[in-house]
Every structure is written in structure tokens, then in C-alpha cells.
Image (cartoon, rainbow, N blue to C red; front, side, top):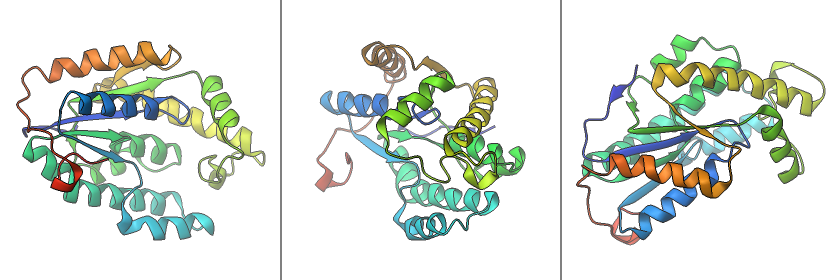
Length: 233
């Protein structure tokens, strides 16, 4: 289990397979919280400049094994954690994350990496104050992705696993594996399930209601401009 958050700030994260609508919801939440004058920091998966070039090169040449892929993402997470997320939580900021350690617990295990090994790598991370899992049927997810993309990426489709020569079929099989892992994590990590098939407005109402509860006893810090170093993105 991850350790509870004992700092002044609040950690709110969203999870879900590709096409679940989680990114839309956390973007709406971010804008709403900032409109209320809250100090908010937003972080997203695989965004650390420290490993971005390495990840890009490895993906382009299809050189990443499941273990190296796992370690690269863990490095990305650790860099963002040490330099941004943890210091801001200590300062009392609301930290929003589009994907968290649970993404690794889902994707890496779906690639055959040992579940306990992956969990130990992220043992320094804290249990979020709110962990929202946007659950959608596989067909809904696949249709959303195919209608919004010209093509599905190699690793996104799980092509490195040899599941199928057909990229769409491989994508479906890989995403199914990830769905199964997320469903296991609901009880293990106390993920709050949101029906990702509901209208966007209805989902956002649920999200705000949940977040409002944890902000009742939150002192936080006053919002400032990005140039002053707290409320960014």
C-alpha cells in the first residue's frame, strides 16, 4: 500500500484506459479550481524533460522491453515527484495529476512485469487524497480513439507484445488487459469509480462534489500567477 498524504496540500489524480475521458475531466476540474482562486499545479504522465528524449528515441526504434519501459516511466515519475509534486504538497498546493503510479501498475503488469516489483518501485509515492478511475466499456474506448486519431501508436497498441499482427486488434487486447488490472486496483487502492459513459457535464458534477469534500478542511495557500511560481499550467 502507498503511504497516506500527511502534507498540507491535496493530491487529486485521474486514471483510466485510453479514451476513458479522464483528461477532459481533470482539465475541467483544473479550470474550475483556478476560477475559485485555488493554488493548483497540474502534472501529466511521461512529461519529465529529463527522460523525454530517451523515451522518444526508444519508442521510435522499438527498443523498449517491458522492463526498460517500466523503469523509464518510473524515472519520469520520480523526477516530477521530487522536483514538483512533493515540494508543492508540502507547501499546501492542490496537485492534479493526469495518470499516477496506478498507470504503471496497470500497463506494466499488462506487459507481463511482476505486480509486486512494480509496486515496490513506486513505494515512495503517496496515496492520493482523491483517486478517480473513469471506467468505460472497451468498445467505447476503442471507438473514441479510432474516431479521434489517424493511427494508433506502436506501444499504445501493445504491438511489442506480439498479441496480433493487426494493430487495432492488438490495441483492444492490450487495453483489455489494462482494464482487468484497473478493476483489481479499485479495492486495493480505494479508487473511486466514475462512469465514463455519462455526459461530460454529469461526470464533472460528480468530480466536483467529491473534490469539494476533501477541500472542507484544506487551508492551502493563496493562488498566485505562474510567474510567482505556484499556480502553473
